[in-house]
Length: 387
Ligand code: PMP
Figure 1 (cartoon, helix red, strand yellow):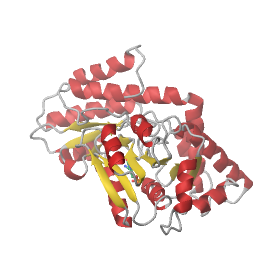
Figure 2 (cartoon, helix red, strand yellow):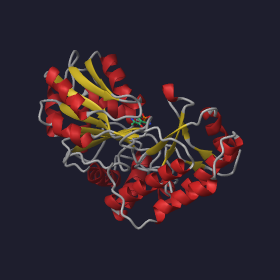
Figure 3 (tube, rainbow, N blue to C red):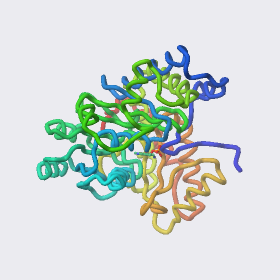
């Protein structure tokens, strides 16, 4: 195994040393004033990154747990929803809804493209009984950012709530829950938040609370009322992954100190530089519009085995990038640039990518790629952080 360990995946992402240090401290008991202080402060800082005044709850689960919480708490059997999707993670909304027996209107775009807000507007007009619209901020499987702001304008005029999977997008792409009219946003700890996997979070607007009161779907571990009752005392209803919450508190303090805007600008700059490097190599980006700052998805050149490329980079060079998922398996690879991924990590990643591509007989010039990467990072021009 190579000594090097560079993680360029869109979750889990690398951890800052300060967060790693928290994780090696002796375990804390969670029912203490000290733990409640940490939970309360972490929740307040989460509201700043979600850009919301709404309630936010922490679940001990991966991101999908919060996705499920945002279905079972607001719907009743037979209710109708819109699931908008153009990739593997958006499809999870439709699968989950079908599992629970909710009627689902699917609004889709081809992989590599964004959901069209007009298509959601049309679906809502045709289905005035829709209770909730489920969408994704960054579709991690394709590297596309969906236009939540435009979708929010449409959904907020209706009775339906807007639920956004911001599991990968939060803290990499711009997201403004309240200003954009989002009712429920969900995320996980292992991406932009720079904490290991194991925590998920979801926010709940007043409009969504009204649906909770009417919801007849059975739930136990994920019942929002239990989380609300506990949170009144900065507590959680079940044993929380307290070590992760302490780590989260540290990571959020670091983001706050740097400033959310600066954090997003730096991520946008690394994303833009990575895209420039790929283009300089003659590679094609998979996302055809609204390219997200979470991850750069790249089409594997003809004649190259995408799985082999990822494997050689990981096993022989210690650089882990992500392959394609589902029908994109072997056809794309994905290089992430969110959270604590640094310029140095990406430089090594690009160098190793070039070396392995050359080994697999795709001619590429590493100097060109690094020059393009550095040109973006060195440019004084301020990048627009939105897409
Ligand atoms: N949604 C998106 C957009 C994601 O990127 C992921 C994880 N890659 C998930 C949902 C699922 O999260 P988890 O694996 O933490 O359950």
